[in-house]
Every structure is written in structure tokens, then in C-alpha cells.
Length: 249
Image 1 (tube, rainbow, N blue to C red):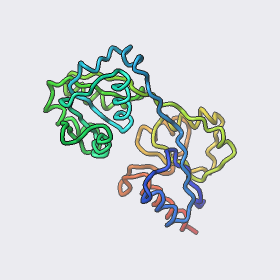
Image 2 (cartoon, rainbow, N blue to C red):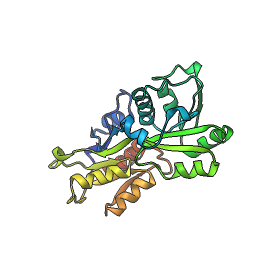
Image 3 (cartoon, one colour):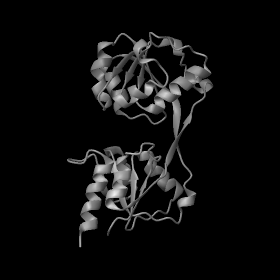
């Protein structure tokens, strides 16, 4: 069956040159965006209840833009003046670039990984005598603690924000040819909102093996998978699939 409509379970991109808009224009399909999950900040009081005192740390590990936002939000709520000597270990260039929203680059010690968390480990190992704080969500990827424990560094995880399932009740009678998911929580949100969801002819696109597993565990058929050989991104995987099915006779 041909693909005419896609629902991406993320916020709409704010950049005009997003690959999703290119897919929409080039392949003549309708692409809608709707976050299936959202983030809510944890209060400074609840962070303190985790026995976290920001004064005790000399380095911060940042794994997402959310971790950047909520670290500085909690710091402000705690009236903690972030010292210029604090070191920042950012999982990717995008996160490091986003950090400029809060700090002046030239005055800070910022260390940047490639993309995957494991690629940040040589930099962390180089500064293994630091006291690291990992401000993260309540749903921390298993690989991060594994990497940090293997490095045998002094680190503390902190729940600074929580991943919540969004209310999707207004989508009850809306049908899409493709639903695109990026996290296991997105799949859980689908079934929390629609416990009787039947896939039928809906194609499911997933990003990452953990999202794929969650989809399969819920009895879904995964039709589009990323990253995959030749299609490292969701948009590339969608474009390849749409080209194949829409041109088929």
C-alpha cells in the first residue's frame, strides 16, 4: 500500500531545511508532528532529596539538550552560582553548541564526544579524578552507567527531569499510513492512550534497537528500521521505504 500520510512522534522541527519537509515536498506525502512524550522538570527540593549538592561536583556530564536545560534550571532554583572552573562533558557537538545558551564558551572547559556515549569515555577517563554529576531523566539508558562504572570514575546520577506520556485522545479517530517512533516510551504512550490499538495496514517506523524491541514486545510489526545499512537516519529510512512502495505497481 502506498504511503500518503506520516505521523512523527516528535515536535515539529524549527528549521526550514529539515529533511522531513524535503520528504513532504519531494515525495508528495503529508507529514504531521505530535510529541507522544514530554518532559517535566524535577523540583530543586526533589533533587536535594536525592542527596545531591551541586557544590560537591567538579564536572557535569550532559547527554541531551534536556539535561542542559534542567541542570541550569535546578542550579538557579538552588541559587547555585555555576563556577567558571566547572568542566562540561557533552555527548555530541549539538549538545555542546546548545550549551552556549547558558555559558560563554571561551571561559569554560568543554569536552565533546562524537555521538554515542561510549565515544565520550576517553575524555572522561583522561579526567578520572573529577567528581562527575550526570543530570538525566528518570529513564536513563543502561549503557551510560555501564560505561561510567567500567571507567571507575566518581560519578553520581541525578534525576533532574521525568519523561511523561502525552495525552493523545484527540487522535483517536485519525489514521496515518506511517507512525514513526524514537523511544520505547513513545510506544508505551501509544498503548496507554489507545490500549486497543490494532496495527492493520499502519506501517511502524522505529529508531534504535530499544524502540524496536518495545514495538515487538507490544506485538507490532516493524516495517521501517533506522539506523540501518545505507539509512543511518529516520528520514533516510522513510524516504527509501516510500520510494519503494509508492513506485510499486
